[in-house]
Image 1 (tube, rainbow, N blue to C red):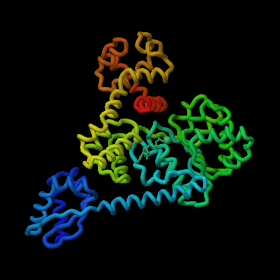
Image 2: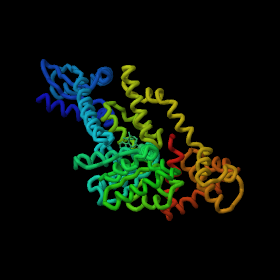
Image 3: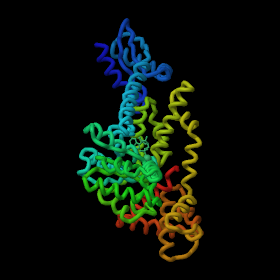
Image 4: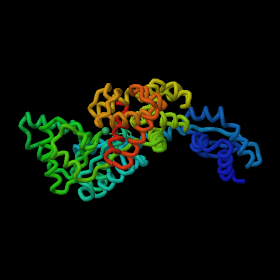
Amino acid sequence: MKIEDAWVQALDAIKEKVGTQTFELWFKPLKFLQFKDHNLVLEVPNRFFREWIEDHYLRIISETIEGFMKEKVGVDFKLGEVQGTTALKKIESRRENRRVKLASRGIFLNPKYTFANFVVGASNQFARAAARAVAESPGREYNPLFIYGGVGLGKTHLMNAIGNLIIDSSRDVKLLYMPAEQFTNEFVYSMRNNRMDEFKGKFRNLDVILIDDIQFIAGKSGTQEELFHTFNALYDTHKQIVFSSDRPPRDISPITERLRSRFGMGLIADIQLPDTETKLAILGKKSELEGIPLPQDVALLLASKIKSNIRELEACMIRLGAHSSLSGRPITLEMAKEVLKDLIRDDERALSVESIQKTVCEYYGLKIQDIKAKKRTRDIAFPRQVAMFLSKTLTDSSLSDVGKHFGGKDHSTVIHACKQVEIRRDKDEDFKRRLDYLVRKIRSCE
Ligand code: ADP
Ligand code: MG
């Protein structure tokens, strides 16, 4: 049998023996280099990888391949580290060039945030599709596009992806991406220094404007006024406008009604909390992009412990990668638990019935005592039911535990509350969104 064929078959046999997860992690990255003097030479991504393979899987490799070759076979590993890092470095330096080139035109986009690097799941599918449509035909599909969602869920990524794609397809487009805070600062500066003509010239002659974190302008009436006129100038000439926000337009306050209504004139798309599968897929993508090998069980730990913030998820992975390269040991479940113990505990602590009560009360403008008391007026009773429902679904507390936290109600009251909330959620789309918002708020690690 030819060695190449034997290697392909050996890989299949090994996959059978070790299982898909181990195979994906430790065998898939192996590259066949050559076979000489009864010696099989395989390329491994780095030193840690080689040590791990030699310690754990050398025998299974040599035995399996011997079975197919019907002869004694030695196995050697060669480091592919140089090629590996160079490839990543090349991509990075290409990105850096692009960043600088765009910046010289006053366009501050992050070249890393593209549609290709954005993982689609049920939670973000709608927002991504809308963003994509806008990027493909700016000013014609949805105008404005208003994307909202909790902290670290990919709004800035999508905004940049829109910008990057538009720039790619029409080089001379006049495009601006800017956080609302910067818009505000530039406006204030221009006012103070009598440079409003310049300001208007800059913002009203654009083809595409992407303003991130628009909730920032709440309470800033001068900026709102100016944004309103900028909006109209661009909108009337069919220029694309995209906003992002951590909350839906109706929850941005205080803000003038006329501006609020502009936000909703096109399409409003929300990004919801990612499910575990999506989080795993994102981790897979990021580990590939960053060149950090992440075992499946570690990915699962991160995805299940970090509920609501993808930035956090990514940060954990980077931390593990750094730890691994400093200590010279591969990332394992044990290491992950040790390195991330503070973070993981914090996340659990955050989801207490108390914190849920606090968030719900803040949202409905009630005092904590109100929902713990017996009052049955509707403006208190319903928020109380919402808080009970969220306590039951977001924490591990039993029905009677939840009841106790609400001034000693019994478990049937909690069941009733959960039912009421579910009924309302299923028939009232607006309420469902408010509920999603509360969940995000409760879970966000701000
Ligand atoms: P936000 O602006 O909503 O606070 P970001 O867009 O900054 O969040 O996203 C936080 C991090 O999570 C970024 O590094 C981003 O690339 C990553 N991220 C979020 N959603 C996704 C996704 N669906 N696929 C890949 N990466 C994602
Ligand atoms: Mg952001």
